[in-house]
Image 1 (tube, helix red, strand yellow):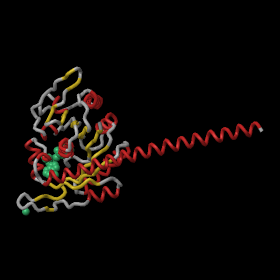
Image 2 (cartoon, rainbow, N blue to C red):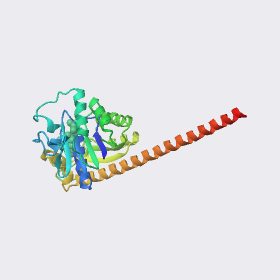
Image 3 (cartoon, rainbow, N blue to C red):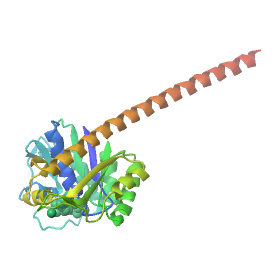
Image 4 (tube, rainbow, N blue to C red):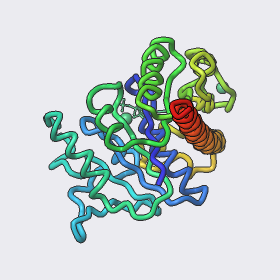
Length: 284
Ligand SMILES: Nc1ncnc2c1ncn2[C@@H]1O[C@H](COP(=O)(O)OP(=O)(O)OP(=O)(O)O)[C@@H](O)[C@H]1O
Ligand SMILES: [Mg+2]
Ligand SMILES: [Zn+2]
């Protein structure tokens, strides 16, 4: 199972929308997928998937059964709250425990991908999720505004320092598709994401415009990738790019590992030679 985290230094940039639709896009491409909502304070996956009324989950043989949404296994903190309006006042250790529980005690089965939606920022919660989950790759979300881009820089650095390869930076809300004529309008400008990716040497995954079908599908609790729309096509291409990058990163890590192994062997051989030489010198 490969674990992918969706993160950003910034709130409200579309992380949850992208996480949910990444899960369903992967499903559409034929993979077995799980979706874990790790935002314990503001879980939005239940709303995005029309699961606001789910309360409490069945457990079987000590494992919690996730909710099956068209074949995607979904687990959210939102399912465990007494009511939609109950604020979470948990302390750090309990949050840590919940995340451990979600990773180890939810019956994910033999899925190919687990998509993890993270809360905004790079605080304690995100750190503990990352430590516990050891993700295989991160997807970073930004919007075109420069403020967001500053915060996103932090998220990229965080991912790199935590040893999670960035498999793509997505510029969300980049331009807008006019609901009247379908032409693209630039609102906040665009191109910042691509520039930032180049500057920080992480792969750029593409632009996703502001699109009323994306917003509406969120309100309706249905993934937009299931609708026949230009947004769904754009997003499908973005996901293909993410998967390619994940493969590349894996290949690169394998090469580095092999290189390290070979270097170690060479060093051991050299050491052995030196030892033999000094032995021989001692005897003569
Ligand atoms: N490309 C888009 N076009 C139109 N609306 C969008 C787009 N991306 C996200 N939205 C809308 O923006 C709002 C915020 O999105 P979302 O909840 O995914 O952001 P977030 O980064 O997860 O927020 P938070 O930091 O609170 O977790 C939602 O109403 C969502 O439907
Ligand atoms: Mg969110
Ligand atoms: Zn128009």
